[in-house]
Length: 295
Image (cartoon, rainbow, N blue to C red; front, side, top):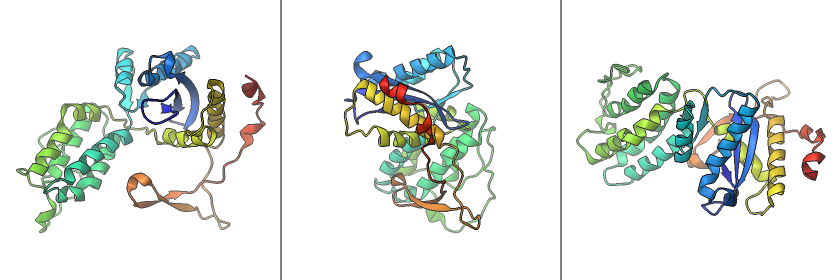
């Protein structure tokens, strides 16, 4: 769900359903907070309406990937639907807590491991086929950071990388230290293990997060819109996104693929190369949108 303003004072919540095989928007539901007794209930209501619409059209869902919203968890659990958690949201929460531990006394060593632990989250999700398998791989990092690469869990008995001998013992964490104890408590608490078991093995919602950025071009958060105005702008954003979803990577005249350097805010100044797609087009405007606008 995307709220029309920060915090708990949001008036509208737009719930988007995306087919993660094709990155196509299949439904958008706009919920007003006073319909459901407050902004904290808008996300669950948006999901209920979207699922009802898809089911009425004969769509059978293999699974659904969301963040870890408690109301959504309970709702999907009661409906016996296969529910996975988006890895990025989980990694974001863990990274913040790791940073807090590393800023404490004697936490300097942990700073060097933060990127590796973050990568380990994605590897754990993508390389496992079951919940217990994910947990076994996830907890192995506590041995790895101590230079121990053989594990007690039979589901993941040893690390897959080649064993390297190192004379630099300063980079490894020690078991009987406050920093390691805090790390162990963070990574193995009951909720963390429960969430790891349900991490999505195949799909990510990064494309949906990118669509939320597209909505800003049609419905900025610093402008107040009436319900119908907001709904129409959401529809236009979805049409624009679906029309441009399959854009190929741009190439030079010689046919060489073009990349661009991205400085993501979340990466704190770290850059990476990303494929640059061809320019967006606006052919969706040829569709008779006057019916939507008149509505």
